[in-house]
Image 1 (tube, one colour):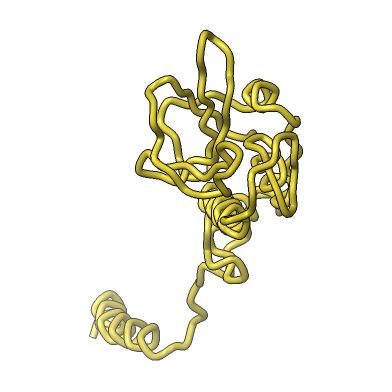
Image 2: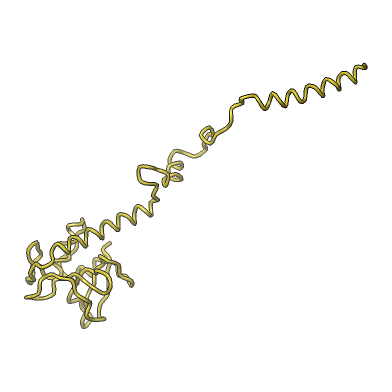
Length: 183
């Protein structure tokens, strides 16, 4: 056999043997964990904030919405806890209220400081067109605010309305209102 022919025959035997050797070799496989990141730790945390099992994989927006919901729940539970307490002009709780005193007392219990009067509370809130539960409802006449309550949804409010009527939930009785959100 010629040298060229013997080399060609050897190649025919070697190539299948090398291919078979590759199949049975336990060469290490690359995994996502083996890849070196070019991101800084802060960037990695930002990109994977939703992957943190300790917080249920929630994004910052979802966490903020959850905090807002809890705050609203606490506002509504706090105002409901005052149901039946008497109205008293100038009273700011905990056992008697006027309208702005009730609002101030409720929001103080959720960590917000509001001014004492309804007109000052109107100035301390951000006006909104579409109220959400827990927003404030300001009643106006002649361009001035004369009453405030806490929006309960479905055109209902919690408020301390007048002497002889305890703190309760009522339907909004006029269209001369605007809404404010505690910032």
